[in-house]
Amino acid sequence: SETIHSRSYTHIIRNIVNDPSVVFDDIVTNEQIQKRAEGISSYYDELIEMTSYWHLLGEGTHTVNGKTVTVSLRELKKKLYLCLMSVNALEAIRFYVSFACSFAFAERELMEGNAKIIRLIARDEALHLTGTQHMLNLLRSGADDPEMAEIAEECKQECYDLFVQAAQQEKDWADYLFR
Image 1 (cartoon, one colour):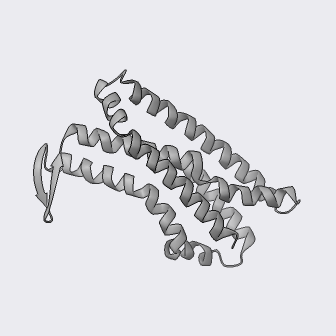
Image 2 (cartoon, one colour):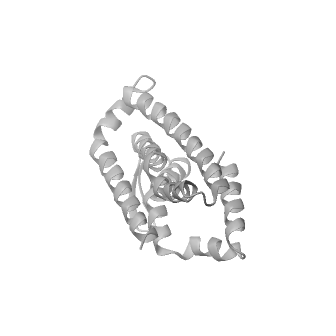
């Protein structure tokens, strides 16, 4: 569904501006967008990095680029759990200020077609959120892996902080959009 979302956003942008490249180029240079992306992508980056170390180096303590790295299955599971939690924050919090803008236009009977597209995307994000929450609940229960329940308990504060940060970044995004 993410490919469909991407095409939908592209369709919306092409209907609003003459030169969509201006909008697309801004995505990679806009500091506000980059800050939002960093809050989520860092968890993916850490999971990918640890997975690479796991496959390339195996368990143990290693020096990589002058940095001491401890590789263990437990640490890899922790990175997976935190990455999944960041997806949960993304699906639960991160889109709604932007969605609200489209819905506000529709309420004023402006750009109603765009709002219909965004409503479908919002529905998909709610489905993604439900799926992610089911996965997290399964991991927290320890039903498939008791160690995951321990990891979930260890990560409680970090997960809480992740959501607080996501909420603050969404408030900052609203301030940026409505300045």
